[in-house]
Length: 259
Image (cartoon, rainbow, N blue to C red; front, side, top):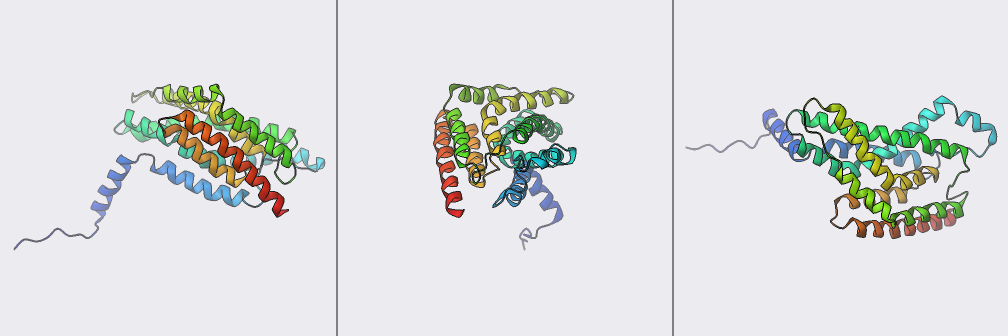
């Protein structure tokens, strides 16, 4: 009499399943971190300006805005926005790194690449925060015309040849494959993200100075990710340009109706 294999989930079977899933989807923990950052970013910014990077309207609070504690909080908020929005954008790169660095070095190679990427984005964030504190705010409720102007500039950048060229430069950055070349992978992550900043930086800075509009956060994340995975990035960039302009108009109308 033959016995059928047990369908009960055992610890060994669970470990094997998780190992296979991790092998096929090395980006799973980046996606999980991005999802968690989305929840936190939505909680911080949706429906209010709390957590935004705006300069306070009361000039008496400018000194407080430049204090170390406030700057660290704002850098943290910027980092949350970067993980939420750039996490999906980095998925193709992470999969490429995983394919180039197989074996025990794979996870470390991914971490080194993402570490270099986050370092570049934090530097950009510090610059953006300084601009936001020093310049007037562009919130849709307080400065609707300035808000729309900023996002129309972002839409215009999407149509520029330099924008498309930067996407190609991103893909051209090679991944060092050796075991003891972690510093080179870190540098490669920084080089990749530097071109990504050229491509996505205007939109990310606009996101910061306009108070992180939730609709635009969603639209940009989808569009910027699509630019990295589709066969025709120029077409995706054009579609994102029109999508940004339309979403900015919708955000403006909703704000006017809600006020």
